[in-house]
Picture 1 (cartoon, rainbow, N blue to C red):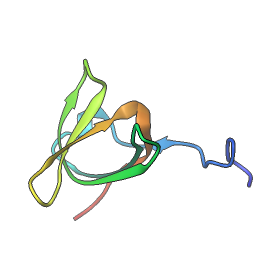
Picture 2 (cartoon, rainbow, N blue to C red):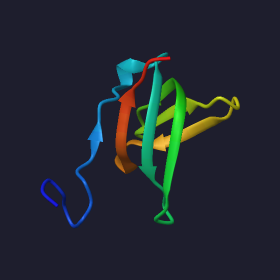
Picture 3 (spheres, rainbow, N blue to C red):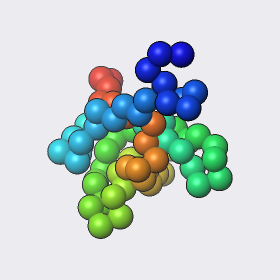
Picture 4 (tube, rainbow, N blue to C red):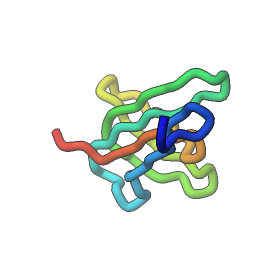
Amino acid sequence: MPGTVGGMPPRQNAVAPGDVGKRVSFQYELPNGYVGEAVGILEAWDEPANTYLVRNRDGELVRVPALGVRYGKVIGR
């Protein structure tokens, strides 16, 4: 497939640390090789850990490592 690397589509992350307070969506790789998803409000950017902190609809704080992000975007409500 054109535009893929090793059968995987290229990574696309349009979320920046300055997007704190906005609604975001991430698809990211977990350490065990599975893929996780996080949708919610970007609460914070943890610079030392290079990690996004997303509050999901259940009120849980989800840690999304920036290096593992496959897709990330700011979304409307």
